[in-house]
Image 1 (tube, one colour):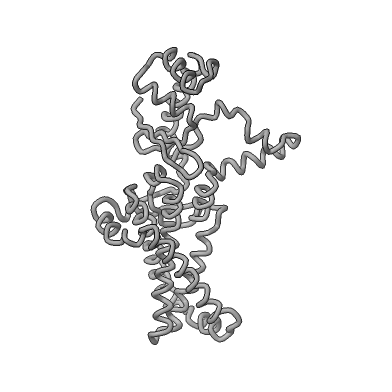
Image 2 (image 1 turned 120 degrees about the vertical axis):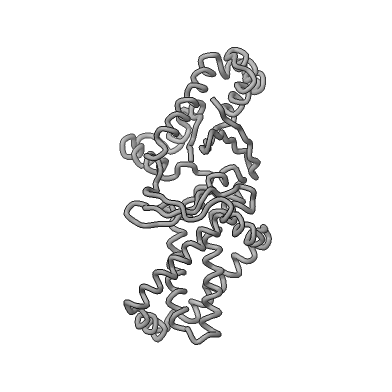
Length: 317
């Protein structure tokens, strides 16, 4: 069993990661220490003794527990290999950008993700978009009418093609953010999510980053769309293409709002998950609802704390 272990420093607690091939598992501290010992010591009795010493609990583990834990890891790794296609939520994928071609782009844009630059720019761009819509859209029936008039069939085709470019730039934002923190993205691709065509960025390596950096990676796409909003606002004020730029502004802003949706695997889902340290968010929420319906007498704390010692693996990506 080939694997590597990593401990990621967070603000309040440490996060423990098991990596095998291209898969990442979130594990608890106990399993992290067991596997650390296992890399240099294959005797289950010795591992148990070392773990009990380290945690200052003589009966924390025994040989059977160590063996069961390691067997569980082997089983889950094997399942993740055999079931990787089934577990994906994006189907019929094909790559658009990867490897050296992508790295050149990410390297050129990585300055945008210096921490101070990112947070200041993100807030300013967000406020600028809000102020623009407040001044020009809310309560202005004329602008709405102009937008509706611009939605001819020929314009819709052009808007669709340009919007596809915007979404590609959105994915470049995620990839650049991940690249700038040393977690090289694998590819940008296209696939089907439910019944919808989507673009995606494989930033699996970002999972070993700390919480703030992961959230910046999650926000990277929206950040780049806000940059596009700024360009479109400039075109609106300083070019003769007001209706054209306004239409794209509305479409792009609607896309940004949709991206914040935490109920689907859009950016908001991952931001919410990483900020609150909630792994397997959809699966846990479904499980919680089932527990409440089937076992209404159980409290939330009982559900949360059930079998903590044996909940060793929390997710793979």
